[in-house]
Length: 143
Image 1 (spheres, rainbow, N blue to C red):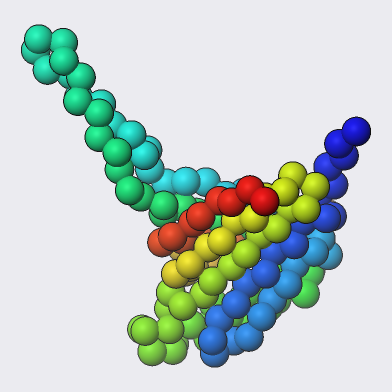
Image 2 (cartoon, rainbow, N blue to C red; image 1 turned 60 degrees about the vertical axis):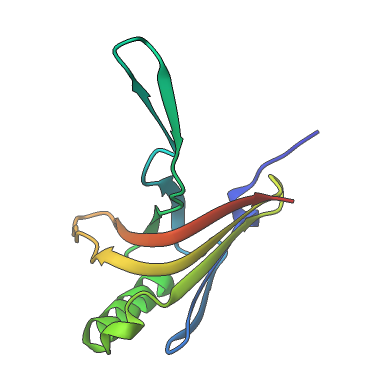
């Protein structure tokens, strides 16, 4: 029998100037990894011949849903604020690894950068903040 649990997933973010942030569920609502572009394109000529192109593009986005009062939310906001004023060379030096032992998947992310600060919502009930990170190289592996 196979059983999945989000609490078994571990997301580790690293930056040479900022250290390591490991997320294992505390304050974390969800993680979404989305590839940005198609890997195949097909062009059809007037005679019906199809030319297939293999496109080597592993860019992606990661969206992290964090509770607005979580320590992870505060840490990512600090990281963003530091990187906004740091030397440009530091902007995309973040790396990450997402491991899911129950699905035997590991996603390795390199050259990550904040796309923007999350939109802020304040209401009677606590909200989630969505951090969008752009990834230059996202490799999805299966053990």
